[in-house]
Image (cartoon, rainbow, N blue to C red):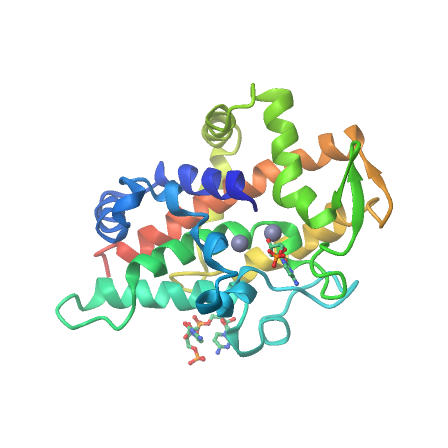
Length: 265
Ligand code: DCM
Ligand code: DCM
Ligand code: DCM
Ligand code: ZN
Ligand code: ZN
């Protein structure tokens, strides 16, 4: 996602933090965040092109083989070097902090918190599990209404931007409130299952990546080959997917952080 998508994921997550998570997040946030996780959820995008951080660029996605429309950790996350592996890794780093707070932790847990929060957003963007051959839609040139762009940017930014203009008075906080209302009154029965992991796992990103490539094939790539002009038909049907993925990202980020920082065995 772009800045707005990441801000929304983290803002929604904050509303579902348990008390221990509120305390831990406050402790690890940088001062610049002013107590707000959402304020720093785009940090991994800001730094990924700097020489000393270039190694993190591939951790934002897990591209999948062309036209397969499925995801497989051992195939698509070689040497754990992808968004799914990064979510496992930063979860483990934060767990080490909550486990033995007396010994010295060899990680920067402020960075771990910001990476985990960012990658939990990215894994829910369907085209972050898009095809290898077109770099997750980056090489699919399309027009968004009368603007030339690519399919990846349509899903990172344009659908959200158009929704803000059309339905939310250009206000991201109004859009976030609408999603929070949907979570309370529309998706309330789904929230528990979205947040849960099988087999006592703390983090379970593999199913999120599988959902994403399925949605990429059914909605993102569908009717959006190179040279296509995308307009109202595409926007109205895909916005529902984008909104649900942002909401799921928020719920799952909160649930994962709640498990990490819970003192319950
Ligand atoms: N996994 C893997 N290779 C690794 C680490 C993890 O394939 N080196 C996969 C196996 C599981 C998932 O990640 O699908 C969760 O691993 P764990 O149960 O060890 O947390
Ligand atoms: N793991 C991790 N970071 C990695 C590789 C693996 O956090 N770079 C996690 C995933 C599994 C656990 O470690 O939860 C065990 O992995 P393995 O099977 O590789 O020992
Ligand atoms: N991206 C992707 N798959 C790739 C390359 C990039 O999903 N193979 C994502 C990461 C960014 C966006 O596309 O969200 C643009 O990439 P970059 O910023 O590296 O140009
Ligand atoms: Zn992206
Ligand atoms: Zn990213």
